[in-house]
Amino acid sequence: MLKRALDVMMSATGLIALLPFLAALAVVVRLTSHGPALYRGVRVGRHGQLFRMLKFRTMVTNAESWVGYCTPEDDPRITPIGRWLRKYKLDELPQLLNVLKGDMSFVGPRPEVQRYTDLFNGEEKQILEVRPGITDWATLSNSDEEAILAGTPDPERAYLEDIRPGKIQLQLKYVHERSLWIDFKILFATVLVVLRRCFGGASPERSRRQHSLGRET
Image 1 (cartoon, rainbow, N blue to C red):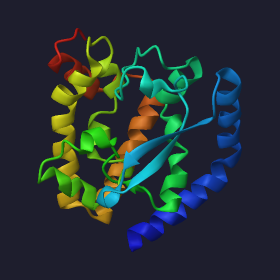
Image 2 (cartoon, one colour; image 1 turned 90 degrees about the horizontal axis):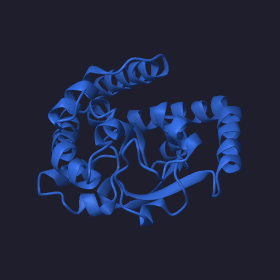
Image 3 (cartoon, helix red, strand yellow; image 1 turned 180 degrees about the vertical axis):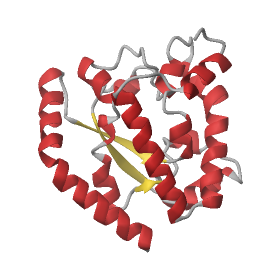
């Protein structure tokens, strides 16, 4: 209950404080490419309930019908303004509405599309027992996921084989150890990652994971 109260308070405060900025970003997205300002992707939430996760649209319309759900950094479906939004994670800001509504929390396993949650085994289904979030340990570990997938001949296969297994383990770690203290640690670490992106410098995690995929660093 306390976590939900904090989610409501922080998301409402964030939406009010950022309203002019959010409106400006929405206008820029609409004016620079054809389509709506917001992307409403269907994701699997707590207890397997489907919901529409909000993001600023960063790709061409109907992008999911082109290839698949994995998006490498060099994906041609990404719009010019979308590339900038993704770099600084600004496309995630509309999820404050999802948090306020109760579909998501600030901290929790990132929600997946149903084709991936259908792959969950018995233990992995525990991930769906908690409310999905904007950030978690797996999000921090894979903060450069798009860069890691760039240049791979089959991004979806690379995701399923090289990224997803570790991601699942970190999500289970969160489910088993979750607490308000852990949430605050994750939020603080997330802020540091975003600041690092804003002020330059490649993360050690990116270099390590690129090496693990056999790519030059």
